[in-house]
Amino acid sequence: MPLATNKSSTIVSRFFCGLCACFFIGSMPPTLAQYQNQYQNQNQNQTQSQQYYVDGQPISQERYQALQMLNQSIPLLQANRNQEAIDLLLQAEKMAPQMAEIHNNLGLALAKLGRNGEALQELEAAKQLKPELAATWLTLGGLYQSQGQVNEAIATYSEFLQRFPGHKDSSKIASLIAGLKKELANGTIPRYIAPDATSKDNYLAELAGHLTRWPESKLPIKVYIASGKGVPGYLPQYTQILEESFATWQQGAQDKLSFISVKDPSQADLVCSWTNDSNSFTNRAEAGETVVFTNSQGIVKGTIKILTVAQMAELPLTNNRLRQICLHEIGHALGFGGHTRDPQDMMFFSTRVTDQDRSLSPRDAASIKLLYSSAIGMH
Ligand SMILES: [Zn+2]
Image 1: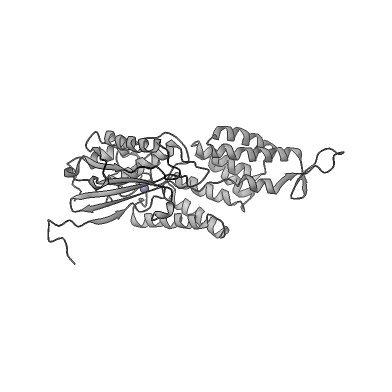
Image 2: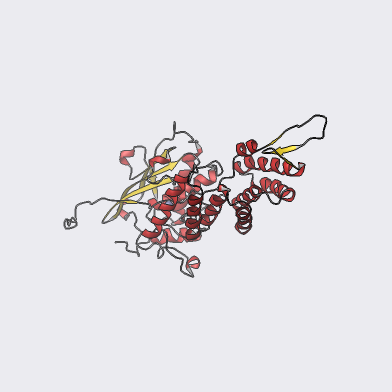
């Protein structure tokens, strides 16, 4: 039915950030418990020299020590003490170069420090040595995803599902694959990168068809941030990080847009809240969810929900990570309805494995400024 004939009516349409496959990455070293069950030393006989056994088979003391180091690396990885984990794992690797788990964890630690080339080598080594190690496939898929290699990520995750159909993360990975494919189909992840795309100073052309914006009459945007009190995982600094993230976009736009904080959600145009339940999201592989409502003038209101808990223990929700999620979701709420394939951008489609304090890329800043320049007509 043609509804657009009455120009004064407000036709509110719903529009999702397709999927933020963003901020999920498959990377999990085998658990400490698995190793502890599998590898235990037994003092065979007090009168003989100590002998170490794995699954009933004797192993050398050197190999046993390598296993101990491997176990010690896991809490270091979970605490983001990545360089310490690398130092330890390199020692372990010398003692037991054939142990795939060492290469896997080394790959993860290197990836978390942004040393992607070396990480890839270690993960390939782990895959060759022990293709039945599920963690390697997830870490490798995650590494591809975090570098913008969507097709390689989908292929690796798909092979993981084929090889390990009963794995505890298989439904999550299936959601992730479906989400990535949907984004590719919808064009909210560009299907390809133009040869010079990353050298372009903004990404409006890449996101063509997925752009909207708040009309001038709606500025400054009235923002309400709900209390996070009582939400499991919420920390008091999260609200401050979210507020700073709004300010960062405003600076990036060189004040072509602005925000005003309101205390009453019914007075707000953009309502932000916290949740510890990713099952409430359209796609549970997300760490945040943004919905905006538009009419013929542009955005009329929106909501942002931010997850207060880590999606996996290996990538703890640090202040750095939370800031990236906030900046990314605000970007959607400001009118970027898609993602980029340049890992430098905050609107990149995937999380980074690295835990660094990051802000907007020059392209993010140039894009938001251009989007809110009156010269560009969106409608
Ligand atoms: Zn997103």
